[in-house]
Image 1 (cartoon, rainbow, N blue to C red):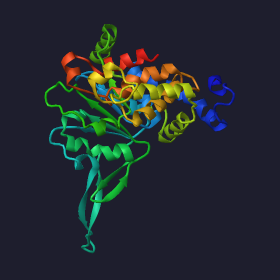
Image 2: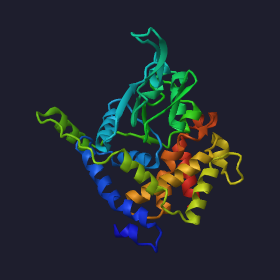
Image 3: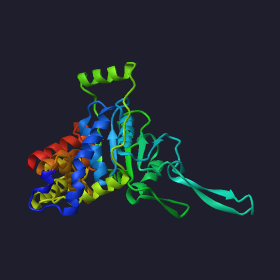
Image 4: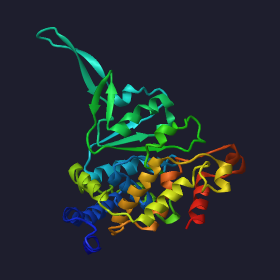
Length: 339
């Protein structure tokens, strides 16, 4: 922990005390997840950053890439209450938030409304295949993700704290999928791409899951109160003016109407990233710095998070689709031209 204690008092004594448990806990969580999940180290790190920032994460990947298993395993390692919603075309908003029902007192015969909580009332909510349900139901998560509460029949109900939505979606080219509303996409800290494993990792999965030995049990390494302490710690990490300027430059460079926008951005982007993206890049950089044993945000933290933070916030136009230009390609050009 000397890395955290160095730096001429960049952290307060309270922050140093919390930081002393941080690295040990994070390493233990990674170890528990590795008992079940093979590879995907960058994805696991992205999920940990999401939790440390107090945000939500969208995981995009083809069926069979262990998206659901990854989220379930991580929630077990965190020691948090986990619930799962399988999104389907006939899912209703009240299937997510819960609903009021009329109950009658057997003794008095008096009837009253009683709220029955939906599966959104958990610490970790897995929204599985979120883009297989229509936008009306997808939007039922908006208030929960932004405000930490749901409103049913005019009554506001607070969700447990901490609260994270880890949503999985299939690529939009697959049959039976719907594009998520832009307002909902902007609530996700990251859009992480879950790719195929290497041949060696796939061999490991094969041997683990087709043999007679059961998978190791995943143990809880922390709890909700300690996670909230770590979230507080993230916000104590300083960020230099030069790094903050870099974040603003990158985000503003995605806006076609900004004077700093390149010709590529003006040609291929319809809309750029919002101010929320600027804040998420800064907070994500702080969390990543901590995970890498540093007490300050470096340029490498910003560069590493540009694509997962921004790829779902920039909207390409017809010309990009026609020329086969992806959001990631545009972001790579922005990073390269502003190094």
